[in-house]
Length: 279
Image (cartoon, rainbow, N blue to C red):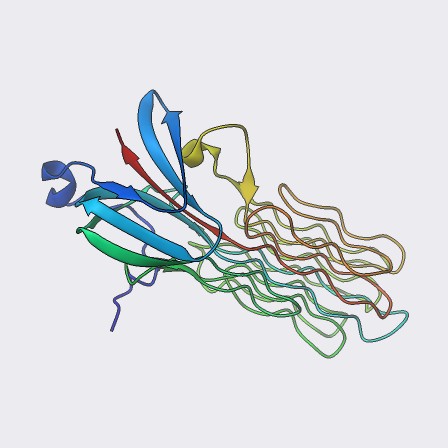
């Protein structure tokens, strides 16, 4: 049975004697690019679909995983709204996650975004994994619990909770059925709905310090739907709507936005897996 580290519950990189005595390995897979972060040159392997990580030379590898974003539910009927969905979990940014990986071939699973349900797990074999975001609720359905919680679906239906603060934050609460709350993101909780206005989606986390390049927020929550005003988007997320199909998440692991009326809520965005090694 995998231990808690293998399941991604421990996101800290190894600081054991392995790190002190072992250099970085070499691997292929996904899309390869050369990056420089903090003056250090790396090869970055980016996986946006299921594939294999092929380690040709055993050693250390830094990993960053983003789970799939949750999907927002369809509102109960006209005059009602749905909460924004929670963002997928992210590990490997706040604390660097570094693993010793022997030579071999390892399955990489990239978590799909949810459609009115949970986002899926992203994982590298049994080495590490992170769960996806939760769905946003509506009348009769609380926001789900996940990496980040889904937004509450109305006056009597609560926002969901994060399964662990290592991954994300809670969904917001609502005090009416016409203005539902935002889904939680990795960096902040979803905003509360009020009256006919949806709550703001929780902020994602900037992963550019790992992958290089410009600012890029992953794991954001979706804005809540509202019959009067949709909830605004958090960093890396999408806004809630007042009608029509909810906005689908775009950035890695972003939760879908809520909506109002009788249309489907927004779907979550797929996660991603990144592996890098020094060159």
